[in-house]
Length: 183
Image (cartoon, rainbow, N blue to C red; front, side):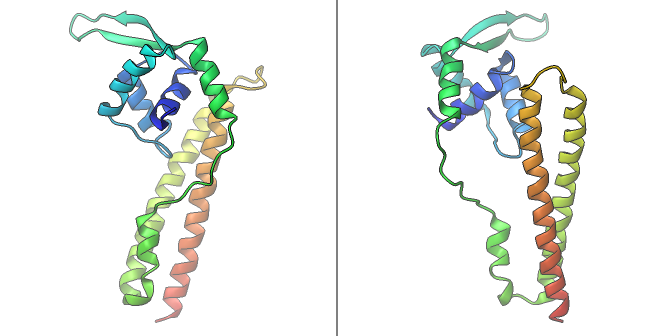
């Protein structure tokens, strides 16, 4: 199963969505770890419908817009997603251009690199703030009567983002201190 298909089924397992909604949620709800564009979403919807992983639930009509197709996951789609979810995974490789630049810090005037590290730190503080706000929002949506709630799973992923951003900020602080001491 392709990566885009897995991500789309993940969203459709929670609620019926249009192609536009899928793209929006991939870039917001899943944006920290997954992005998609229109040329991926719509062709994949057709393929998933052809193989029976999703079905057209309804077509919404507004007088001023083209019809919107709302898709829902089928039982076969859920079973496929469950099977994929419990498969073992390989360790992910982080691709972070800034870390490659930091690898070259020894070549650069410490004052110049200090500016870049401080900028990176600010960006990660901003992203941490977004995650913290998202966590508060999710806490308000959590259903205390459900043992396993989709919101709880979302909170687990957002918590990963919070921990990652805190770690990155801590790393920036260490490098900043090191660069300041090298003056």
